[in-house]
Amino acid sequence: EIVLTQSPGTLSLSPGERATLSCRASQGVSSTYLAWYQQKPGQAPRLLIYGASNRATGIPDRFSGSRSGTDFTLTISRLEPEDFAVYYCQQYHSSPPMYTFGQGTKLDIK
Amino acid sequence: QVQLQESGPGLVKPSGTLSLTCAVSGDSISGSDWWTWVRQSPGKGLEWIGEIHHYASSNSNYNPSLKSRVTMSVDRSKNQSSLKLTSVTAADTAVYYCVRGGSYSLGFWGQGTLVTVSS
Image 1 (cartoon, rainbow over the protein chains, first blue to last red):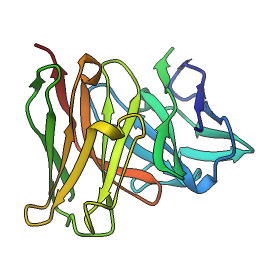
Image 2: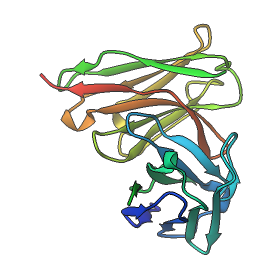
Image 3: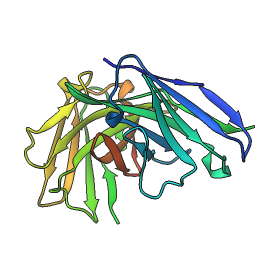
C-alpha cells in the first residue's frame, strides 16, 4: 500500500506570502494519479490540482503543483485570506483500484 | 450545475446498517463518471470508501479495509447512488460525502451528511 506523508503538519504564514506544501509517496506514483484538495471548516473538500500539475476548473493561477521524484509540491504563490484551510494530497492506485489521502496540512494565518 | 445531495438517517445503532442515498441533479448518473463515497471522522482526515459505475453494479471497487461490510448501487431511473455499510461501530461515525469521480481524481463533492453510531 502506498502511503502519502504530508509536511508540515501546520504552516503559519501571512497573506501575501508564498506557501509550499509537500506530499511524499512511500513508493513511485504516476503524476497522472496525484491530486490536491482544499477543505475549509464545515465544507466539503474542493479539487484544486489533478494530474500533479493541472488546475481544476475555476482554480486561480496562484495555485500550482509540481513533482520531483516521489515528492509532490503544492505552491500558493501569494496567499489570499481565503486560502487559509486544510490541504490534502491524494493518489490513485490502479491494482487494486483505490484512492488514498495524505493526513493533511493545515495552513493558518500567522 | 451539478448538485449532489446525500440523505439518510443521522443516527444508527451499533451493529446496525448505515444506509445513505446520493441524489444527483444537473448530470446523468449514466455518464462516464464513477460515483464515489468518501468519509471523514470528526476532526480527522479523509477515507475513500469505494466507487461504482452505472454500467453494472458489479462494476465497483471498495476499500479493502471496508470491503466485507460495504455495498454500493446505482438507480438509473432515480438518478441516484446508494451506500450500505453493515455491522457499524462507533468508529464508523463520520461525515459521509458523495463524490463524482473520474480520471483518477474526485472532481465534485456533495455537502456531506453526518452519521453518528450510538445507542
